[in-house]
Length: 281
Image (cartoon, rainbow, N blue to C red):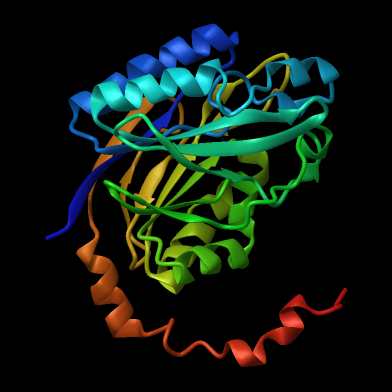
């Protein structure tokens, strides 16, 4: 049986970058102590969700993909013999910034990155177009020591196409690091992603931060990170309010069993879908 022990880390991170990174170093160590072979952090883990306001001062928190934060995470991946999925604020060049996640293999090597494709600009606290260019790397899937991994970031989960692309490329485990608040999306949190899991026959790890990040935002990030199996069943869920390292054993053989039963991939009719990418409103 192909089983992988995976971890999701949710945390309150309304603090300076160095403090937030150190805090997550400790949480990653907890995941390692529990035997996790792959761990994903929350969206922009290294500080508050600054998109609740529009202020150019936050541009200074962006780093290149070989900057100090990713470098520290590479050391941790090697130290703990663990694959790490690390979302961060990426500086491609001055004035060009992305909402990005890197995949770091257990030997400390960065094997790829994903840039958030769908960028929201929704009040009262999701002003992301002020900070991020839309991603330009497509929807890659990576062969890691813990399975075939894909990534969607937060708002991407509201669109069926990224999940389908990852499923068609053979993703076994899809992570969705997020920052979302109760007043806007709570009822969707456990609706959309289990549906993606069923439609595409893969595991999903959904991560959300916790707490209220005043003075940036009065809304509550509601945690509730979870793992969902290819049948759409939530097999483990974290608290709504507390820092937590959620660890679950994922049976990757279930993917074959579910796909062989439902045959959604076989029965697709892509030749009939051209209007989906045509010039419709």
